[in-house]
Structures are given as structure tokens and as C-alpha cells.
Image: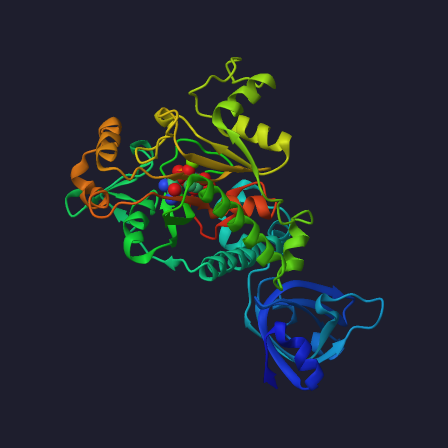
Length: 441
Ligand code: 4AD
Ligand code: MG
């Protein structure tokens, strides 16, 4: 028999050969004593397999439980009209063997694997939850979207860089730094690759990176992770407007690429409403957002209204973007609430050339800005944030040796996926397990 993957089953049927397929028993159903249906899963797809009377006589039959690994030999046939099977064909098994029998308790767990798993199951049993249909679709689509991002950057001639994860510098404020011991000296897990990307543009031009970023977040929400996948880019000689245009183009192009890929069906199964968003996106100044929230009488937990100068947290952000129902660029945040590196607005230097892209259902998925490119201004930025410039000499040097106007952004990939695939929780977009205090990685 020819060894094939389920994905190739269609082709193999045309060839009319006897095949063997290795995989996991995704579902097992006995029909009377003489017929057994096994939905086989091998990562490339699902296949219905029929074990007739002779096959059910095997002494192995009782051991054929959900999640057991098996080798199934047989012939592929098209299922008759009126019967449904994934891919439209099934395997008539003529010989089979168990490779490893899973304990039968998993049968009950199967429901949890394949239906919506609650947060507790998601944490502790992530390795088993991953075998479920939704969870595995999400992981496969993660791969599809990541490829779409890389394809976008490749077509636009960006260079991909892999930057250090162990750093001596902070990028997004000291309060969310994971500190560690680096041979007796303090070091941190990176919060962002931005600073490294900036120093690469004089020789590489437009650059991007896909790296894990780490944040010791005080907030435990549906969109905060301690470790997230950060897609970042940095571009020399662009204007603030061009930064926003590049961002719109990125988001729309990636959605378009994914929707025109073979994964289209899988995407639409999860989010039938996904469309390429309309360009240009709505631009809203930070000060107008505060005004909008006040007009809408949106109040903080203590009953007061938002004031200019205050951070707009998740709740009001979601309220605004969900009410308006379209992507929003929030622009020109006050410098006082933003990082040390953000370029100041020429007309009002208390504001920055910054932006957050908000998406319905999630809120902020991207943060970006133009960067300070003047030496004295960056020194003042360090001072304001109480940063010791000693560790930033390489970043500072860029403002000495051929500085240029430049800007960039960071996109939270799990948040992007939560938006595109209409999922509630960013945790669902990760694949690892973590057992500790109940905090997830
Ligand atoms: O807005 P942030 O903090 O911006 C930066 O880190 C910049 N240095 C990026 C840059 O300009 N190169 O983070 C960027 C994005 C956020 O919009 C959000 O989508 C995501 O990263 N993000 C998180 N995602 C999940 N969990 C967290 N704890 C996140 N923190 C930020
Ligand atoms: Mg941000």
C-alpha cells in the first residue's frame, strides 16, 4: 500500500491505489457490533474511515479509543449521494493496527477539545485542546497569516531582521520589564525590537522583524499576554502621513492575501464577515477621541468623565471602536503619556506624531510613531524618562551619524488574529502550555 497523507486522498483515489494512512482517531463511533466509523486526523486533514464486520472482530477493537494512533489500510471511495464525509470520500479499511492506544478517559474530554474550551481548560490542557478542530484551525491560520505578512514585506522589499531578545535597554517603560540576571549584570527580556530596527535602516532601508516581545503586564485581560508575537517595521525618510498609509496598506493587503489563499474557506468558517477593510481608515485625533467619549457620556469606574491627558484604556477604546464599527487611527497622543522616542508635533510640541490602530472587537492592534531623530531631543527624552543614556549609546549614535526622519510600528499578531478571526481571547492564538499561578504565558 502507498503511504499517503489525508490531504492527498483525493489524488490517491484517482490513482485507484490501495493506501495506508497514519494518524490519530479523532472520533470513533460503533454502529451496532459490525460497523465502526473512525474519523482519522493526521494534521493535513480529516478522513472518514469505515471498518466493516471483519475489521471489527479484531482483538484490538476495544483499544481503539479517541486519540489513539493507528495505521489504516484500505481503498478510497467517493461517498454516495446524501452521505456526508470530509472531502467527499472515505476509506474502506481492509487492515488496521493500533500504534499506540490512548486511555479511554479522553472520549469524554473530546467534547471539550472540539467544542469551546473554557479558560481553565485552555491554560492547563492546551496541549490537548490543540487537537480540537477550532484550536488547530486557529493555529493553521496563524501560519497562513504570518506567511501573508512576510509576503507583503517581501513584495515591498523590506529586509527581515532577527534582533536580540536579551537587552540592556527598555523601550516601552520600566514598569512592564521582565528583569533577569545576565552574568551578574541586570538585563531584560525585550519589549520591542524597535530600537534595533531603527539602527538598521541606514544600511538596510525598510526593515521588519517577527519576534516575541515580553511584558510583565499588571492587567490580566482578554488581550494582554506576557509573551506575544510582535511584527514590527521601521522605515527611513517617510512622513507621518506615509506611516499611516503604509499601515492601512499592510492590514488590507494581508487580509486580501489570506482571503485569496487556499485557506479562504477555513477563515470564513471562523469569521464569515471578514472583508478587506475600506481605505483610507478613519483618522481621529486623541483630543477628539476624549471629546467623543465625553459627548457619549462614557464614564470611568469612579463615575467621572475622561479628561485630556489621560490614557484611554481598553474599555473606552472598545466602546468607541465598536460603536463606530470601523478601523480607527488614533493620532497625536500627548507626549507625557508616550515613550521617550516619539517625534513631537511641530505645531504643538506637547503632542507626538504617534498612532494606535483600533479594530472593532479588540481595540488597539498596532502602536506606531515617527521617531525623534535629533540628538539633543533624544537626550532630553532619556532625561524625561529617567533613562541612563549609557546603555543607549548605539541608539544615540544613530542621531550623530547621518540621522534621518523615520518612523515605524509594532503590530500585536495575536490581537490581529483575534480581530481577523473574530475570537474573544488572544490566549487562543498561542500554542504553549503553562502551569503556575494561573497566569498564562
Ligand atoms: O503599543 P506598543 O507597546 O508599542 C511598541 O512596543 C512599539 N515599540 C512598537 C513599534 O513602534 N515598533 O506595542 C505594539 C503592539 C500593541 O499595539 C499591541 O497590539 C501589542 O503590540 N501588544 C500586546 N499584545 C499582547 N499582549 C501584550 N501584553 C501586548 N503589549 C503590546
Ligand atoms: Mg500601545
